[in-house]
Image (cartoon, rainbow, N blue to C red; front, top):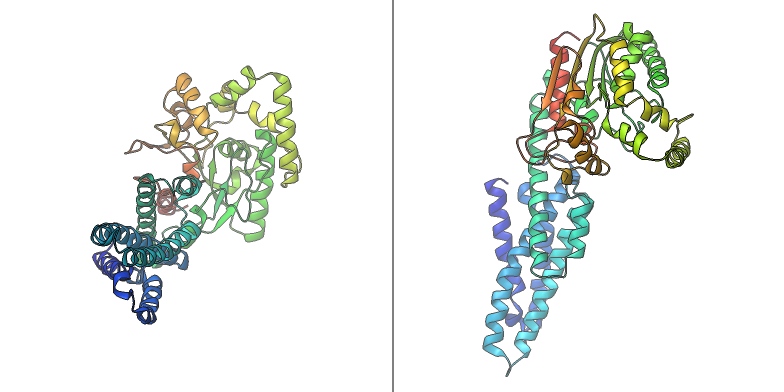
Length: 442
């Protein structure tokens, strides 16, 4: 946080501490509440105002407000406990009334400030996630663990506001450059298990960031599960329709996971003349060990049950004819080895690939945390699904090695969890990818 923001929070904390500890002052002079109550309300409203100047959105302003409220609560809590301890030593047990009034005033003031802060950040923060929210509720009444959780929440929210504000300023500074305004529009192609839904974007915050910097973005919008051949047919039709409707001539395709295989097949089977570039992200070009494991270790009966359940659910969510097992079969090492020989790097199309490394299973969301050790045991370094040796394709290969112990998972590469990862800005990474395509004249 900026110096002026810290100063504002400290000043309001001291003022609020004085108000919270004024119980002794108003004992027998309750008319003073006419002055004190508006002051308490005013500080609850003003908290965070000093840090609003550059905060880009209303959501973040409320998050900043809530963070300031929790900081004020935290500081006041420490000051108040010391004050009440001294007061208790001075008045108890003989004269309990001054201590009782002071304790009531302090508790009410703290309750108001804490409620203000925690509701604000719980309702507006993205980075808190479900896990921290649940832990905050579970440990909220267990001292001193509740103070540790409170400090974690404050740090997380303050960092979110700082990071998003700085990112907004960067975008504002380069707005006129339109660094992602490529010659041909961008087509984002999803992988296995997902669809392109309007209200839950598979690509997280990435499409908005690209559009903000000048990119024109479309989606593959094919079924969530199907054979590579069938998915390729859908994508070919989608690409042809976009080209026909817009007159854009060609497209820059960015495909994640199985979507990369679907696009390679589509390029060779008719879509190639409409594709200027293909960027595969986290794609298992040499197969995915979890597919082999699923087919060899799980009984056919259970496989069939899983497939029926998935296909039924996917159909209800919009897939015309989902085929779970066909998709899984096409991701095995054997199938991908045959596929790789048949669908080689196409001539005249710039192709590149991106892979990443997850360092610890605990940082991957389900099912990545389950598959991480399995893939590592058979293939070494991986992103929770795909190993290092399977990512490479095309003339340029980018392998993202994390600077910190967390690593970058299969889901992190598409901003699936909307998480700001220390040392890796996924949105800025995609801006860099598309900027490079623009510089190549694509």
